[in-house]
Length: 318
Image (tube, rainbow, N blue to C red):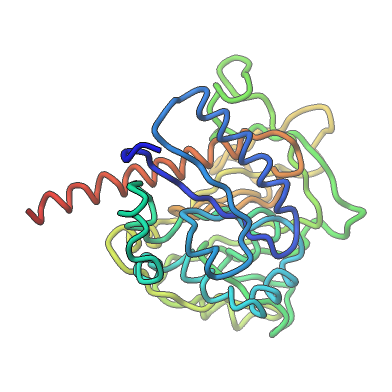
């Protein structure tokens, strides 16, 4: 490995749910990126079950599954607080204390040398865990990680038997990924299984969403204070709506529906706030790696930005 190689470690939380499916699509996505845009980036994908494994990651996926089970296992594995730090805080100092010489020993430029507010993607249950507030939840029965200033409605689409698949046109996917027609990407087959939706976009604030806690059957995530300019800027950004599912009565099994954030009424099924991304549906169950390709591109962009920022800071010290 060259000393100029940038190693990016992407973890998938592997406590419960569809983590192996994410790993498989991440590998496909990395191959697609390497084929289309040769670079000096080396990708490593890691199943995360312990705080030590999490501390090695530059980015993280929280998969679909059962959000209550994932939160309970995370708490019993002493992972819940590290996950909150990973998403909402600066864990670089903790990582460097644990492994003070590994970067110089490897001769590898790593994103986590200067990481703050790490890129994180939650699918279905992962979206619930990343929300700052979740309803239809008994107090004490669901812990949240937080990171997205939204309130989610758990199991919005009903029971398992009411799950469905529909084609979505996702404008944020580049046309070049997986072929296109007329300059737009072909539809993405979205799998909704007892899926949540974003019920409300909340105001951006430094502390917890205390107003939400007063609502019936609603829990909120604890507050974390970001460190560093990049982290503060990222956590202070507004929530972007990335995809909307129009009225389900208009959803056809044969015709794609187009998500037009800000123009269509319907149910919000994908959002982003800074480096944190969430989807109601399960891209990992489709075999279609286009969203994973897009997300790895976002992770690499964040790594390049931090790498450049760090090099400028180093020059200023001389």
